[in-house]
Amino acid sequence: MRQSVGRLLAESWQRPHLLPVPFSTTASETKEYAHAVNVAIMSLRIGKYLGYTGLQLRELAIGCMLHDKAREKE
Image (cartoon, rainbow, N blue to C red; front, side, top):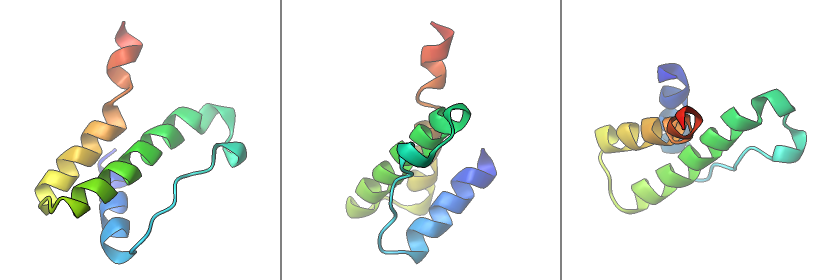
């Protein structure tokens, strides 16, 4: 997950726009991961707009990648 978050952060700094992963082209076994990445992409855009620091953006992205894991435990 650290690599994924690191790549997302790097991409978010290098590119002015990141597009979500389209679900129609995503295999069913990777849809959950694609959803987490999409949530992270959108959240990073908002965080950058709000002026979050690099550390805050990293923590935000990690939270996004894990946000559905707690629901799995229920």
